Image 1 (cartoon, rainbow, N blue to C red):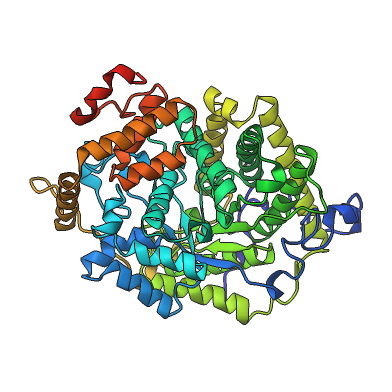
Image 2: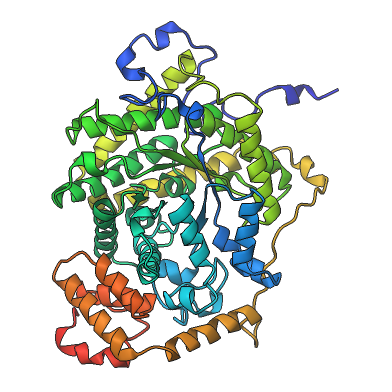
Length: 582
């Protein structure tokens, strides 16, 4: 017989974000709500879903997590990454899309031989520094992925978070498309491209000047809105990464929309109308383990977006089209021990996202706490999604929990508290002002400390971690990758040596006069206030490197070529001395 204590709820009896929950809810809790607050799916205020028929019309986009992050492990197994991707697609493991990942040097927008990163090559996804790799190097398989996007609508997401890192890889793809004479207007995908979040969380920031990051990010957004009708050039605020830093649901929504307003205001300043771009940035949130809080968060998010569009930008509520709401399952909920329990967590988080009306999902693999996803992890994730979509029948009707007293009360509560916090940020001058003052970073730090204390003190439960540790006594083995690292006296692995050899081959293959001229044009365009995207594309075609492209942009905006001030501008560019930005 189970102990009596096992039949009682543990923890503090509040939601993950500290919301007090009554034992039962009734009509009196939602008496203040009107039909205009709830509405119908597919129409303002979109509380109940983005489309009228929801999943009867189409299921969510299934985007597998960081496929290219597994590239170093795939190559260590002796497999060709391109063949591996094609096989996953043929087997139905990859269906509608994937997300690319970046190595440390990509995230910092510096070259792979930079002293800060050269010994960590391949620990994320392998180096990506030039278009040359996709034409002549070991990244040629990217051509096949891009062609699938153009021909079949396969969605490619750049998920670096740091604006310039996303923009660099994206413009490399555009350069490849132009060089191969493909139609870039058919390019389908999205990128996080949210430098404000990286500044807030200090995650993947790498001292990129905020002015540089914001300029490059917004130039990319404007270029896509005007030239690429199928592409979503930002998610308008990476709420998922913000949440992973330790914040709560109110902060997740408020910070996301504060970021979105910064980008939207800039687009309006550049002459675009909200109706031309407002629904393009997908809303990317965290699919958390708190079941009802996740459901109601997605419902509240759509309503907040709709009201911001109407009240701040004067958008026509009848003509409004709701942007997609996407989730990443919460990486912070995954544990290193007894990883089979992570499969259970994934299932709960996925079901909550579906019941909240999600339009796109990326599931973390059960290996999230220790390594990128294995093939087995991808198969498990597809199984979770397919079972929920095809066996449970929860997709037969839109917003099946709509009308529940608890769900409608919690949706309204989350929206009201998040909107109040958003207004505080706007009253302080907006998100960029809050980042520069450090206020927002302080809020994140306090929230993260509170979250850690809740687990330490047992006010929140994580099975197998701070409670029910006896479940770890039963070893349940699951496949996972292991990565070979260098050692003292031999700091590079065999693969890292190959990467550096290819880097040297790349440098030796270039016509430096051609590269220099392309970078000079980029420099002048940046200083002159032009949109940098076309000039970045031309620089990639000339086989410039990521460190050179971003170094030139930094200098043109008055910052050091290398933001860490450890690397000088290449000697073959020294003829620029008369027109340096600094």
